[in-house]
Each structure stands twice: as C-alpha cells, then as structure tokens.
Image 1 (cartoon, rainbow, N blue to C red):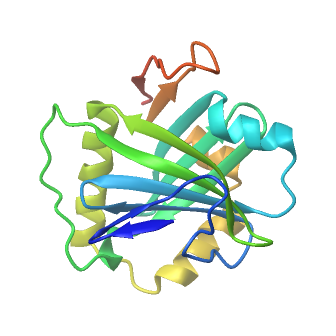
Image 2 (image 1 turned 45 degrees about the vertical axis):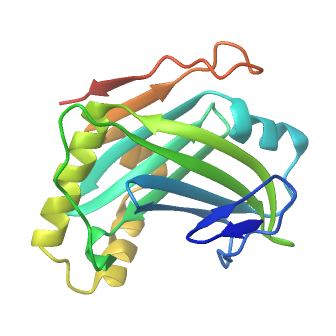
Length: 190
C-alpha cells in the first residue's frame, strides 16, 4: 500500500488498511466511485480466480426501504450487501442519466488482511441511475433502528430471495480471462 496525499494505492499482496471483522462483503460509495470489499478466510486458488476474473452479475434490490447490492460471482458466490446512504455525511444524489459508476473490488484474506485479488468493475448508466434514485429515497426516509431492521429482513429473506426481488441487474462477462474486455448491460425486472 502506498499513500500519496488523499489517495491510497493498493497491490495484490499488500495488507489492507481496514478490517472487516468476519467473512462477508461490504459496498461503499465515495468520491464518485464505489468499492466492494470481500473478506474471507481460507480461500482456494479456484475461489480467488472466480472472484478476480469470472462472470459477475450485480443486482440492485430494495426491500422495506433497505437498498441491497448483491454480487453473484459465477455460480460460486453470492454476497448481498445492504447499503445505507443515510450513514454518509454528504451524499450527492444528483446524477446524469448518462453517468455510470466505476469502482474496485478487493478480495481480502481475513486471516492476515492480505489483498488476494483486485478487480475493476463498472455499473452502466441505467443501473447507476436506479442506485442513486433509491439511495436518495433512503436518505429522505430514514429507517429507524436500521440494524434491527436489517436483522429482521435477513430472518425472512435468503440471498437468493434478495436477488429474485431485484429491480435491475448489471452484467459483466469476460471475453477472455486474460483480457479486460467486457459486455455490460442492465436488465430491468418488473
């Protein structure tokens, strides 16, 4: 990890500067970008490869006012990540219909906080517009007892249920695992 003024540069093998506190994933938006941090213990090489360069579908779901970003890596992993725009001091929800959102996915070994993989990813403009629309609604309609509300939702919905209720989906398919060529599109589900 190299820090230069306000930016931090990470590389595979570096120690990550945040600790997740357990296996799972988080989704954050900051400075007009997003990041997903996936932390697990005891990765296999195949699992790291799937997270680093395999097929990836990202879903946007809203259940009882809670915004969920769910990342499905091939058939191996589903990570659902509640997103609470109300936690941000400043959250600019004004976005053009032509603006996509780009970000980085970090795969972290929870045993020693080492970065095992880094992957770039982007949301197309339609997916981004819906994400910001529901984030704005979430900020305007604050959910009281958010942690208790999340727990209640998880007691009633599985990760597969959360994906089934998705409003839209962002798809990325690697043309070749060695190339960075992607076909991205959003699919609306009514």
